[in-house]
Length: 124
Image (tube, rainbow, N blue to C red; front, side, top):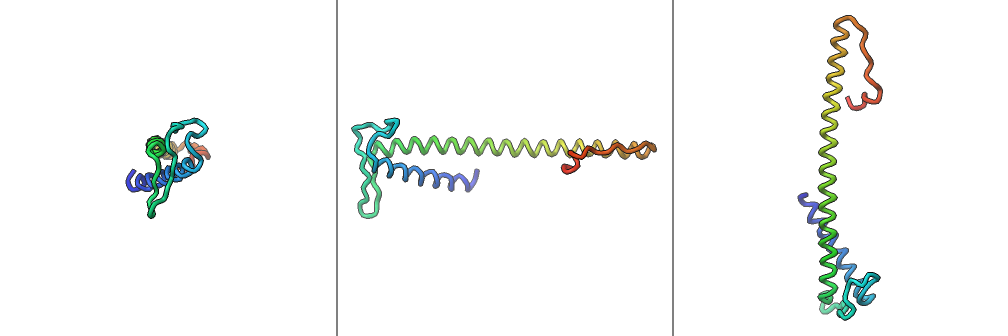
């Protein structure tokens, strides 16, 4: 994944931070009640530092970790799809070479050439 994983990590961290701020301003326990009701849901800025209650931080860290895992999984799926597509293109090129070779042999034998199907021509 290379340098893209660092960028994704920063994006996910920023989303998590915004979520923590939003949750902190709304109060503990969202619609699902994931944050314990007794947890202090304070988001305070002291001398330029943002401080969040441990319950919110742990909850958001869990969500961020899940998002990172999902992004990694989707990246793996994309890489596999690209690999499959490249292999299919190679197979198609090989098939086209066989068709062309067969047409050259037919031409050399004096028989009429069979046309290449129009839907295969762009891949040649």
